Amino acid sequence: MKIEFADARPTGDYALVLPSADGNRPGAASLSDLDKIEATLRRQRFEGEAGSAAEAFTDDGGTARRVLFVGIGSNSAGEAAEKLGGTAVSRLLKSGEKHAVIDVTGMGFDADAAARIALAASLRSWRYDRYHTKTKDKQKPTLETVTIVGGGADADERWTSRWQAVSLGVAFARTLVTEPPNIVYPESFVDLCRPLSELGIEIEVLDGAQMTELGMGALLGVAQGSVRDPRMLVMHWNGGADGGAPTAFVGKGVTFDTGGISIKPAQGMEAMKWDMAGAGGVAGAMLALASRKAKANVIGICGLVENMPSGTAQRPSDVVTSMSGQTVEVINTDAEGRLVLADAITFVQRTYKPATIVDFATLTGAILISLGHEFAGLFTPDDELADRLMAAAATSGDKLWRMPLGESFDRLIDSPIADMKNVGPREGGSITAAQFIKRFVDDGVKWAHVDMAGKAWSEKPSDTYDKGATGFGVRLIDSFVADHLER
Ligand code: BES
Ligand code: MN
Ligand code: ZN
Image (cartoon, rainbow, N blue to C red; front, side, top):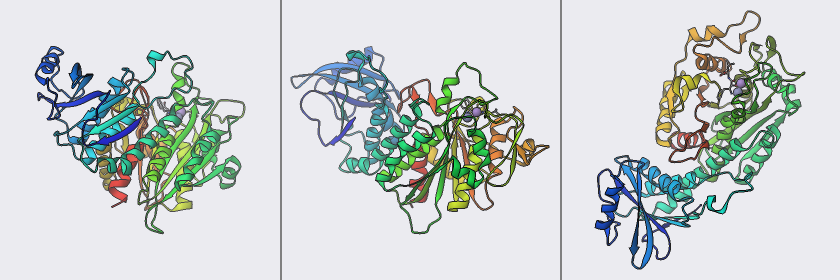
Protein backbone atom coordinates (compact mmCIF):
# COMPACT_ATOMS: atom_id res chain seq x y z
CA MET A 1 0.00 0.00 0.00
CA LYS A 2 1.39 3.34 -1.05
CA ILE A 3 0.98 6.03 1.63
CA GLU A 4 0.99 9.77 0.93
CA PHE A 5 0.31 12.92 2.91
CA ALA A 6 -1.10 16.16 1.52
CA ASP A 7 -2.39 19.55 2.64
CA ALA A 8 -5.42 19.58 0.39
CA ARG A 9 -7.63 17.07 -1.40
CA PRO A 10 -6.30 16.18 -4.84
CA THR A 11 -8.30 16.29 -8.04
CA GLY A 12 -9.27 13.26 -10.06
CA ASP A 13 -10.55 9.79 -9.29
CA TYR A 14 -10.57 8.55 -5.71
CA ALA A 15 -12.84 7.54 -2.89
CA LEU A 16 -13.14 10.20 -0.22
CA VAL A 17 -13.09 9.05 3.39
CA LEU A 18 -14.44 11.37 6.09
CA PRO A 19 -14.34 10.66 9.82
CA SER A 20 -17.40 11.35 11.89
CA ALA A 21 -17.33 11.60 15.67
CA ASP A 22 -20.27 10.38 17.81
CA GLY A 23 -23.47 12.12 16.68
CA ASN A 24 -21.58 14.87 14.87
CA ARG A 25 -21.67 16.02 11.31
CA PRO A 26 -18.55 15.10 9.40
CA GLY A 27 -15.78 17.61 10.04
CA ALA A 28 -15.02 20.84 8.28
CA ALA A 29 -13.68 18.85 5.34
CA SER A 30 -17.16 18.77 3.92
CA LEU A 31 -18.86 18.67 0.58
CA SER A 32 -21.15 21.11 -1.17
CA ASP A 33 -24.16 18.80 -0.90
CA LEU A 34 -23.51 17.68 2.68
CA ASP A 35 -27.14 18.21 3.66
CA LYS A 36 -28.35 15.74 1.06
CA ILE A 37 -25.64 13.29 2.00
CA GLU A 38 -26.59 13.49 5.65
CA ALA A 39 -30.07 12.37 4.75
CA THR A 40 -28.67 9.26 3.07
CA LEU A 41 -26.49 8.60 6.12
CA ARG A 42 -29.50 8.84 8.41
CA ARG A 43 -31.30 6.31 6.22
CA GLN A 44 -28.37 3.92 6.79
CA ARG A 45 -28.78 4.58 10.54
CA PHE A 46 -25.23 5.93 10.64
CA GLU A 47 -24.53 7.94 13.78
CA GLY A 48 -20.75 8.01 13.87
CA GLU A 49 -20.30 5.24 16.44
CA ALA A 50 -16.75 3.93 16.60
CA GLY A 51 -16.15 1.40 13.84
CA SER A 52 -19.40 2.07 11.95
CA ALA A 53 -19.35 3.17 8.34
CA ALA A 54 -21.74 4.31 5.64
CA GLU A 55 -21.39 5.20 1.99
CA ALA A 56 -22.82 7.80 -0.30
CA PHE A 57 -22.12 8.81 -3.88
CA THR A 58 -21.97 12.44 -4.83
CA ASP A 59 -21.09 14.81 -7.61
CA ASP A 60 -17.86 16.39 -6.39
CA GLY A 61 -17.15 19.28 -8.73
CA GLY A 62 -18.11 17.25 -11.80
CA THR A 63 -16.59 13.92 -10.66
CA ALA A 64 -18.77 11.04 -9.48
CA ARG A 65 -17.30 10.28 -6.10
CA ARG A 66 -17.76 7.54 -3.53
CA VAL A 67 -17.73 9.04 -0.03
CA LEU A 68 -17.13 6.71 2.89
CA PHE A 69 -18.03 8.02 6.32
CA VAL A 70 -16.26 6.28 9.17
CA GLY A 71 -17.45 6.57 12.74
CA ILE A 72 -14.67 7.24 15.23
CA GLY A 73 -16.94 7.58 18.27
CA SER A 74 -15.42 9.47 21.15
CA ASN A 75 -12.14 7.56 21.19
CA SER A 76 -8.77 9.15 21.96
CA ALA A 77 -6.95 10.57 18.93
CA GLY A 78 -4.69 7.54 18.56
CA GLU A 79 -7.54 5.03 18.76
CA ALA A 80 -9.71 7.13 16.49
CA ALA A 81 -6.87 7.31 13.99
CA GLU A 82 -6.43 3.55 13.87
CA LYS A 83 -10.19 2.96 13.61
CA LEU A 84 -10.32 5.40 10.74
CA GLY A 85 -7.39 4.07 8.73
CA GLY A 86 -8.27 0.44 9.37
CA THR A 87 -11.98 0.74 8.63
CA ALA A 88 -11.33 2.76 5.48
CA VAL A 89 -9.02 0.08 4.12
CA SER A 90 -11.16 -2.89 5.11
CA ARG A 91 -14.14 -1.27 3.33
CA LEU A 92 -12.28 -0.16 0.23
CA LEU A 93 -9.61 -2.81 -0.27
CA LYS A 94 -11.59 -4.78 -2.85
CA SER A 95 -14.19 -2.12 -3.65
CA GLY A 96 -12.89 -1.32 -7.11
CA GLU A 97 -11.38 1.97 -5.90
CA LYS A 98 -7.66 2.33 -6.47
CA HIS A 99 -7.09 5.43 -4.39
CA ALA A 100 -8.54 6.50 -1.04
CA VAL A 101 -8.21 10.04 0.28
CA ILE A 102 -8.77 10.28 4.02
CA ASP A 103 -9.51 13.90 4.89
CA VAL A 104 -9.16 14.85 8.56
CA THR A 105 -9.00 18.61 8.04
CA GLY A 106 -10.41 20.38 11.08
CA MET A 107 -10.78 17.18 13.11
CA GLY A 108 -7.92 17.98 15.50
CA PHE A 109 -5.60 15.09 14.57
CA ASP A 110 -1.99 15.90 15.45
CA ALA A 111 0.93 14.65 13.35
CA ASP A 112 1.29 11.41 15.29
CA ALA A 113 -2.41 10.59 15.06
CA ALA A 114 -2.39 11.36 11.35
CA ALA A 115 0.58 9.04 10.90
CA ARG A 116 -1.25 6.35 12.84
CA ILE A 117 -4.07 6.53 10.28
CA ALA A 118 -1.41 5.49 7.79
CA LEU A 119 -0.17 2.76 10.13
CA ALA A 120 -3.61 1.21 10.50
CA ALA A 121 -4.31 1.54 6.78
CA SER A 122 -1.05 -0.17 5.98
CA LEU A 123 -1.51 -2.92 8.61
CA ARG A 124 -5.09 -3.62 7.53
CA SER A 125 -4.10 -3.97 3.87
CA TRP A 126 -1.64 -6.78 4.61
CA ARG A 127 -2.54 -10.13 3.07
CA TYR A 128 -0.68 -13.21 1.97
CA ASP A 129 -1.60 -14.45 -1.47
CA ARG A 130 1.51 -16.44 -2.32
CA TYR A 131 -0.33 -19.75 -2.58
CA HIS A 132 -3.54 -18.53 -4.25
CA THR A 133 -3.21 -19.23 -7.93
CA LYS A 134 -6.84 -18.99 -8.96
CA THR A 135 -8.20 -15.79 -7.46
CA LYS A 136 -10.86 -14.23 -9.67
CA ASP A 137 -10.15 -10.67 -10.74
CA LYS A 138 -13.16 -9.41 -8.84
CA GLN A 139 -11.82 -10.86 -5.61
CA LYS A 140 -8.43 -9.23 -5.92
CA PRO A 141 -7.61 -6.08 -3.96
CA THR A 142 -7.88 -2.89 -5.98
CA LEU A 143 -6.77 -0.27 -3.48
CA GLU A 144 -3.19 0.85 -4.13
CA THR A 145 -2.78 4.27 -2.56
CA VAL A 146 -3.98 6.02 0.58
CA THR A 147 -3.56 9.80 0.90
CA ILE A 148 -4.04 11.45 4.25
CA VAL A 149 -5.10 15.07 4.03
CA GLY A 150 -5.06 17.68 6.79
CA GLY A 151 -2.80 15.89 9.28
CA GLY A 152 -0.36 18.77 9.54
CA ALA A 153 3.14 19.36 8.28
CA ASP A 154 4.89 16.75 10.42
CA ALA A 155 2.64 13.75 9.74
CA ASP A 156 4.81 12.47 6.90
CA GLU A 157 7.96 12.68 9.04
CA ARG A 158 6.21 10.86 11.90
CA TRP A 159 5.22 8.10 9.49
CA THR A 160 8.64 7.61 7.94
CA SER A 161 10.56 7.90 11.21
CA ARG A 162 8.37 5.60 13.31
CA TRP A 163 5.20 3.95 12.11
CA GLN A 164 6.32 2.82 8.68
CA ALA A 165 9.04 0.78 10.37
CA VAL A 166 6.49 -0.73 12.73
CA SER A 167 4.26 -1.63 9.81
CA LEU A 168 7.15 -3.40 8.07
CA GLY A 169 7.97 -5.28 11.27
CA VAL A 170 4.40 -6.46 11.75
CA ALA A 171 4.22 -7.55 8.12
CA PHE A 172 7.40 -9.57 8.52
CA ALA A 173 6.11 -11.27 11.67
CA ARG A 174 2.82 -12.12 9.95
CA THR A 175 4.65 -13.60 6.97
CA LEU A 176 6.75 -15.84 9.19
CA VAL A 177 3.65 -16.94 11.13
CA THR A 178 1.50 -17.49 8.04
CA GLU A 179 3.98 -19.54 6.03
CA PRO A 180 3.34 -23.27 6.50
CA PRO A 181 5.73 -25.48 8.45
CA ASN A 182 7.08 -27.24 5.35
CA ILE A 183 8.39 -23.81 4.34
CA VAL A 184 9.25 -22.25 7.71
CA TYR A 185 11.31 -24.62 9.86
CA PRO A 186 14.30 -23.75 12.05
CA GLU A 187 16.89 -23.46 9.29
CA SER A 188 14.62 -21.61 6.85
CA PHE A 189 13.37 -19.27 9.60
CA VAL A 190 16.99 -18.21 10.03
CA ASP A 191 17.40 -17.80 6.27
CA LEU A 192 14.36 -15.52 6.16
CA CYS A 193 15.91 -13.37 8.92
CA ARG A 194 19.36 -13.10 7.32
CA PRO A 195 18.44 -10.00 5.27
CA LEU A 196 17.98 -8.11 8.58
CA SER A 197 21.76 -7.74 8.56
CA GLU A 198 21.31 -5.18 5.76
CA LEU A 199 19.63 -2.93 8.35
CA GLY A 200 22.65 -3.14 10.64
CA ILE A 201 21.49 -6.06 12.76
CA GLU A 202 24.24 -8.52 13.68
CA ILE A 203 23.16 -12.11 13.30
CA GLU A 204 24.58 -15.12 15.09
CA VAL A 205 23.30 -18.65 14.67
CA LEU A 206 23.89 -21.86 16.60
CA ASP A 207 23.12 -25.22 15.00
CA GLY A 208 22.34 -28.48 16.78
CA ALA A 209 25.98 -29.53 17.11
CA GLN A 210 26.94 -26.19 18.68
CA MET A 211 24.02 -26.43 21.09
CA THR A 212 25.12 -29.94 22.05
CA GLU A 213 28.54 -28.50 22.78
CA LEU A 214 26.92 -25.93 25.08
CA GLY A 215 24.85 -28.56 26.86
CA MET A 216 21.40 -27.36 25.87
CA GLY A 217 19.75 -30.65 26.75
CA ALA A 218 16.31 -29.14 27.33
CA LEU A 219 15.97 -27.59 23.88
CA LEU A 220 17.69 -30.52 22.17
CA GLY A 221 15.36 -33.02 23.82
CA VAL A 222 12.46 -31.31 22.05
CA ALA A 223 14.30 -31.22 18.74
CA GLN A 224 15.47 -34.83 18.75
CA GLY A 225 12.30 -36.30 17.27
CA SER A 226 12.52 -34.19 14.14
CA VAL A 227 14.65 -34.54 11.04
CA ARG A 228 14.94 -30.73 11.06
CA ASP A 229 18.05 -29.55 12.88
CA PRO A 230 17.25 -26.89 15.50
CA ARG A 231 18.66 -23.37 15.51
CA MET A 232 19.30 -20.65 18.04
CA LEU A 233 19.02 -17.31 16.26
CA VAL A 234 20.49 -14.21 17.90
CA MET A 235 19.86 -10.75 16.43
CA HIS A 236 21.70 -7.75 17.91
CA TRP A 237 20.72 -4.14 17.44
CA ASN A 238 23.20 -1.78 19.05
CA GLY A 239 21.60 1.62 18.66
CA GLY A 240 22.14 2.74 22.25
CA ALA A 241 25.05 3.84 24.43
CA ASP A 242 28.29 1.89 23.98
CA GLY A 243 28.57 -0.88 26.52
CA GLY A 244 25.05 -0.36 27.90
CA ALA A 245 23.56 -3.64 29.17
CA PRO A 246 21.12 -4.84 26.52
CA THR A 247 17.48 -5.75 26.85
CA ALA A 248 16.76 -9.24 25.50
CA PHE A 249 13.52 -10.33 23.86
CA VAL A 250 13.26 -14.10 23.67
CA GLY A 251 10.80 -15.83 21.33
CA LYS A 252 9.42 -19.36 21.37
CA GLY A 253 9.96 -20.66 17.87
CA VAL A 254 8.38 -24.10 17.67
CA THR A 255 7.89 -24.21 13.91
CA PHE A 256 5.39 -27.03 14.32
CA ASP A 257 4.08 -28.53 17.54
CA THR A 258 2.58 -31.98 17.12
CA GLY A 259 2.94 -32.51 20.86
CA GLY A 260 5.64 -35.12 20.24
CA ILE A 261 5.01 -38.56 21.77
CA SER A 262 2.33 -36.89 23.96
CA ILE A 263 0.67 -36.25 20.62
CA LYS A 264 -2.09 -33.71 20.14
CA PRO A 265 -5.51 -34.65 18.71
CA ALA A 266 -5.75 -34.34 14.90
CA GLN A 267 -8.63 -31.86 15.14
CA GLY A 268 -7.11 -28.37 15.03
CA MET A 269 -3.51 -29.53 15.00
CA GLU A 270 -2.90 -27.39 11.91
CA ALA A 271 -3.02 -24.35 14.20
CA MET A 272 0.33 -25.42 15.61
CA LYS A 273 2.10 -24.01 12.58
CA TRP A 274 1.89 -20.72 14.46
CA ASP A 275 3.59 -22.06 17.57
CA MET A 276 6.55 -19.96 16.46
CA ALA A 277 4.63 -16.68 16.73
CA GLY A 278 6.68 -15.53 19.74
CA ALA A 279 9.82 -15.85 17.63
CA GLY A 280 8.02 -14.23 14.69
CA GLY A 281 7.05 -11.26 16.87
CA VAL A 282 10.60 -10.88 18.17
CA ALA A 283 12.06 -11.01 14.63
CA GLY A 284 9.46 -8.52 13.40
CA ALA A 285 10.25 -6.20 16.30
CA MET A 286 13.97 -6.35 15.51
CA LEU A 287 13.19 -5.38 11.93
CA ALA A 288 11.07 -2.45 13.14
CA LEU A 289 13.67 -1.22 15.65
CA ALA A 290 16.52 -1.39 13.15
CA SER A 291 14.45 0.23 10.40
CA ARG A 292 13.75 3.23 12.58
CA LYS A 293 17.26 3.20 14.07
CA ALA A 294 16.06 2.92 17.66
CA LYS A 295 18.50 4.39 20.20
CA ALA A 296 18.67 1.27 22.33
CA ASN A 297 20.73 -1.91 22.73
CA VAL A 298 18.43 -4.79 22.04
CA ILE A 299 18.90 -8.50 21.50
CA GLY A 300 16.26 -10.65 19.84
CA ILE A 301 16.76 -14.36 20.37
CA CYS A 302 14.69 -17.17 18.94
CA GLY A 303 14.77 -20.82 20.02
CA LEU A 304 13.79 -22.68 16.86
CA VAL A 305 12.76 -26.34 16.92
CA GLU A 306 10.17 -28.69 15.47
CA ASN A 307 8.34 -30.92 17.97
CA MET A 308 7.73 -34.29 16.29
CA PRO A 309 6.97 -37.86 17.39
CA SER A 310 9.32 -40.48 15.98
CA GLY A 311 11.63 -43.30 16.93
CA THR A 312 14.17 -40.77 18.06
CA ALA A 313 11.72 -38.53 19.93
CA GLN A 314 12.02 -37.99 23.66
CA ARG A 315 9.67 -39.99 25.90
CA PRO A 316 7.50 -38.96 28.81
CA SER A 317 9.68 -39.69 31.88
CA ASP A 318 12.97 -38.84 30.14
CA VAL A 319 15.23 -36.66 32.28
CA VAL A 320 17.17 -33.96 30.45
CA THR A 321 19.94 -31.67 31.69
CA SER A 322 19.51 -28.06 30.69
CA MET A 323 22.34 -25.66 29.91
CA SER A 324 21.87 -24.16 33.39
CA GLY A 325 22.78 -27.54 34.88
CA GLN A 326 19.28 -28.00 36.28
CA THR A 327 17.61 -31.30 35.41
CA VAL A 328 14.06 -31.69 34.13
CA GLU A 329 11.78 -34.70 34.14
CA VAL A 330 9.78 -34.53 30.91
CA ILE A 331 6.32 -35.65 32.00
CA ASN A 332 4.58 -34.40 28.87
CA THR A 333 6.44 -33.88 25.60
CA ASP A 334 3.75 -31.38 24.57
CA ALA A 335 4.97 -28.94 27.24
CA GLU A 336 7.94 -28.22 24.97
CA GLY A 337 7.94 -24.44 24.74
CA ARG A 338 9.22 -23.96 28.28
CA LEU A 339 12.08 -26.41 27.58
CA VAL A 340 13.12 -24.35 24.57
CA LEU A 341 12.85 -21.06 26.47
CA ALA A 342 14.83 -22.41 29.42
CA ASP A 343 17.97 -22.94 27.34
CA ALA A 344 17.47 -19.77 25.29
CA ILE A 345 17.29 -17.75 28.51
CA THR A 346 20.36 -19.41 30.05
CA PHE A 347 22.28 -18.84 26.82
CA VAL A 348 21.37 -15.17 26.53
CA GLN A 349 22.24 -14.52 30.20
CA ARG A 350 25.62 -16.22 30.01
CA THR A 351 26.59 -14.72 26.70
CA TYR A 352 25.21 -11.16 26.72
CA LYS A 353 24.44 -10.25 30.37
CA PRO A 354 21.12 -8.52 29.65
CA ALA A 355 19.63 -6.29 32.38
CA THR A 356 16.11 -7.25 31.35
CA ILE A 357 14.59 -10.25 29.59
CA VAL A 358 11.08 -10.39 28.18
CA ASP A 359 10.02 -13.65 26.60
CA PHE A 360 7.15 -14.10 24.14
CA ALA A 361 5.57 -17.51 23.72
CA THR A 362 2.41 -19.28 22.57
CA LEU A 363 2.98 -21.31 25.70
CA THR A 364 -0.27 -22.70 27.08
CA GLY A 365 -3.83 -23.51 26.07
CA ALA A 366 -4.70 -22.59 29.66
CA ILE A 367 -4.11 -18.88 29.00
CA LEU A 368 -7.01 -19.06 26.53
CA ILE A 369 -9.21 -20.40 29.31
CA SER A 370 -8.16 -17.47 31.52
CA LEU A 371 -8.10 -14.56 29.10
CA GLY A 372 -9.74 -15.74 25.87
CA HIS A 373 -8.56 -13.93 22.78
CA GLU A 374 -8.68 -10.51 24.45
CA PHE A 375 -5.37 -10.39 26.30
CA ALA A 376 -2.02 -12.06 26.44
CA GLY A 377 -0.96 -13.00 29.96
CA LEU A 378 1.86 -11.02 31.58
CA PHE A 379 3.88 -12.73 34.29
CA THR A 380 6.63 -10.95 36.20
CA PRO A 381 7.70 -10.56 39.81
CA ASP A 382 8.85 -6.99 39.04
CA ASP A 383 6.16 -4.34 39.53
CA GLU A 384 8.07 -1.63 37.69
CA LEU A 385 8.64 -3.83 34.65
CA ALA A 386 4.98 -4.85 34.80
CA ASP A 387 3.89 -1.20 34.79
CA ARG A 388 6.13 -0.41 31.84
CA LEU A 389 4.89 -3.34 29.82
CA MET A 390 1.27 -2.59 30.71
CA ALA A 391 1.79 1.00 29.54
CA ALA A 392 3.31 -0.25 26.27
CA ALA A 393 0.36 -2.61 25.87
CA ALA A 394 -2.10 0.26 26.28
CA THR A 395 -0.42 2.52 23.71
CA SER A 396 0.36 -0.23 21.21
CA GLY A 397 -2.93 -2.12 21.26
CA ASP A 398 -1.10 -5.42 21.96
CA LYS A 399 -3.16 -5.99 25.07
CA LEU A 400 -1.79 -7.58 28.26
CA TRP A 401 -3.36 -8.67 31.53
CA ARG A 402 -1.13 -9.29 34.54
CA MET A 403 -1.24 -12.76 36.05
CA PRO A 404 0.11 -13.94 39.41
CA LEU A 405 3.28 -15.83 40.32
CA GLY A 406 4.18 -17.31 43.70
CA GLU A 407 6.02 -19.85 45.81
CA SER A 408 3.02 -22.16 46.15
CA PHE A 409 2.74 -22.46 42.36
CA ASP A 410 6.47 -23.08 42.14
CA ARG A 411 6.26 -26.10 44.45
CA LEU A 412 3.84 -27.77 42.04
CA ILE A 413 6.61 -28.49 39.54
CA ASP A 414 8.99 -30.23 41.95
CA SER A 415 9.87 -33.72 40.69
CA PRO A 416 10.69 -36.86 42.67
CA ILE A 417 13.53 -37.76 40.31
CA ALA A 418 14.90 -34.45 38.97
CA ASP A 419 15.13 -30.77 39.95
CA MET A 420 11.74 -30.13 38.37
CA LYS A 421 9.15 -31.59 36.03
CA ASN A 422 7.92 -29.83 32.92
CA VAL A 423 4.23 -29.78 33.87
CA GLY A 424 2.19 -29.14 36.98
CA PRO A 425 -1.48 -29.95 37.51
CA ARG A 426 -4.08 -28.84 34.94
CA GLU A 427 -5.32 -26.06 37.20
CA GLY A 428 -3.29 -22.87 36.90
CA GLY A 429 -1.40 -24.35 33.94
CA SER A 430 -0.23 -20.98 32.59
CA ILE A 431 1.13 -19.99 35.99
CA THR A 432 3.14 -23.16 36.60
CA ALA A 433 4.50 -22.79 33.06
CA ALA A 434 5.69 -19.28 33.97
CA GLN A 435 7.16 -20.60 37.26
CA PHE A 436 9.11 -23.16 35.23
CA ILE A 437 10.69 -20.43 33.10
CA LYS A 438 11.39 -18.32 36.18
CA ARG A 439 13.65 -21.09 37.52
CA PHE A 440 16.08 -20.31 34.69
CA VAL A 441 16.29 -16.56 35.31
CA ASP A 442 19.41 -15.47 37.22
CA ASP A 443 19.17 -13.34 40.36
CA GLY A 444 19.38 -9.64 39.53
CA VAL A 445 17.99 -10.01 36.03
CA LYS A 446 14.60 -8.39 35.49
CA TRP A 447 12.29 -10.77 33.69
CA ALA A 448 8.79 -10.89 32.27
CA HIS A 449 6.98 -13.62 30.37
CA VAL A 450 4.20 -12.99 27.86
CA ASP A 451 1.93 -15.97 27.13
CA MET A 452 0.38 -14.99 23.80
CA ALA A 453 -1.30 -18.27 22.82
CA GLY A 454 -4.64 -16.44 22.48
CA LYS A 455 -3.28 -13.53 20.46
CA ALA A 456 -1.06 -14.91 17.71
CA TRP A 457 -3.84 -15.87 15.32
CA SER A 458 -7.31 -14.43 14.96
CA GLU A 459 -10.44 -16.06 13.58
CA LYS A 460 -11.99 -12.64 13.05
CA PRO A 461 -10.75 -9.40 11.55
CA SER A 462 -10.00 -6.25 13.60
CA ASP A 463 -9.14 -2.64 12.76
CA THR A 464 -5.53 -3.55 12.06
CA TYR A 465 -5.63 -7.13 10.79
CA ASP A 466 -7.71 -9.52 8.76
CA LYS A 467 -8.35 -13.10 9.89
CA GLY A 468 -5.07 -14.93 10.46
CA ALA A 469 -1.69 -13.90 11.79
CA THR A 470 -1.85 -10.73 13.91
CA GLY A 471 1.83 -9.88 14.33
CA PHE A 472 1.28 -9.66 18.09
CA GLY A 473 4.35 -8.53 20.01
CA VAL A 474 5.95 -6.29 17.41
CA ARG A 475 4.07 -3.17 18.44
CA LEU A 476 4.36 -4.00 22.13
CA ILE A 477 8.14 -4.33 21.91
CA ASP A 478 8.43 -1.22 19.75
CA SER A 479 6.44 0.86 22.26
CA PHE A 480 8.31 -0.55 25.25
CA VAL A 481 11.63 0.31 23.64
CA ALA A 482 10.50 3.77 22.54
CA ASP A 483 8.97 4.72 25.88
CA HIS A 484 11.47 3.18 28.33
CA LEU A 485 14.77 2.45 26.65
CA GLU A 486 15.12 5.39 24.29
CA ARG A 487 14.55 8.16 26.80
N1 BES B 1 1.84 -24.65 21.82
C1 BES B 1 1.09 -25.19 22.87
C2 BES B 1 0.16 -24.18 23.51
C3 BES B 1 -1.02 -23.74 22.69
C4 BES B 1 -2.21 -24.41 22.78
C5 BES B 1 -0.94 -22.62 21.91
C6 BES B 1 -3.29 -24.00 22.07
C7 BES B 1 -2.02 -22.19 21.19
C8 BES B 1 -3.20 -22.87 21.26
C9 BES B 1 2.02 -25.72 23.97
O1 BES B 1 3.21 -26.22 23.52
C10 BES B 1 1.29 -26.85 24.62
O2 BES B 1 1.06 -27.84 23.98
N2 BES B 1 0.96 -26.68 25.89
C11 BES B 1 0.25 -27.66 26.61
C12 BES B 1 0.88 -27.79 27.97
C13 BES B 1 0.37 -28.95 28.76
C14 BES B 1 0.84 -30.23 28.15
C15 BES B 1 0.86 -28.80 30.18
C16 BES B 1 -1.20 -27.22 26.70
O3 BES B 1 -1.44 -26.03 26.88
O4 BES B 1 -2.07 -28.06 26.55
MN1 MN C 1 3.08 -28.27 22.96
ZN1 ZN D 1 3.93 -25.46 21.77
